[in-house]
Image (cartoon, rainbow, N blue to C red; front, side):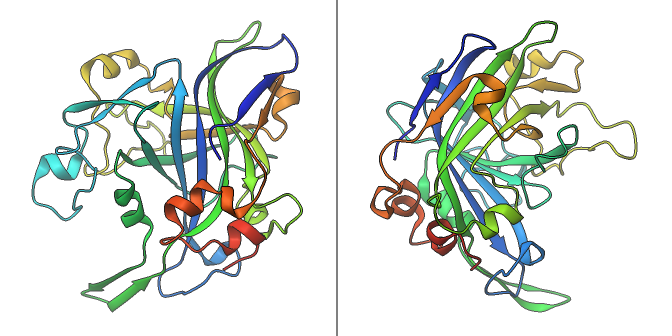
Length: 301
């Protein structure tokens, strides 16, 4: 499908595109359930970003041999478990880069509650498609209290194009948006799981990243991730926080801004090609791992 196109429909407000690419949504049924029939049956919602161009064609990620990429979370190697140590440069115009995000509340933020933030975390940044496939596949494992357990494979939920952009408006500080528009499921199909999980046909979210060295002060504040998932940034990126608790940037804190991108930002997103299953990059890449009924027909599976 590709990264699509953006069309500016008016001069105001001022926006600067930082990144263009494809966005994929997945959900996983709860443990010991072979299918989901509603939002209560969902264990997790995943977002995969696949950047293809931007103001910086070369992205920096953790070194593949010293971070989360393909690592074993039960490893005794502290560097491997924590991740983030070392760095690698990736030219996103020449090599695939995938970011796997896990949403904390099993859905996107409710568009009707625009001042309420919702947490997610960057589970993995990798150049290896098989690493993401492994994270989405079915699993079987043993526990000391409940014995043998089974989790079904994640289901493909949505596919479209996205932009990360800087938004400047009069009288306000510049802030960062993640905007997207779905191509699949086709608009004339049902949208049952998409509507239940707040994955609208298009959406706009303010995005911020939490300073891993700062912790929430009150009972309602997010106190950060466990050490094995805590971000470890290169010094030049960590320095951008200064003493701030949050910074505009990589999408870990989402605040719903709008479900009408053109009205809010004067920008229209257009996908490439027609909504034909043969044009789906998600199915081509992950189809053997993630069942596609929800993606193509908009029904629970």
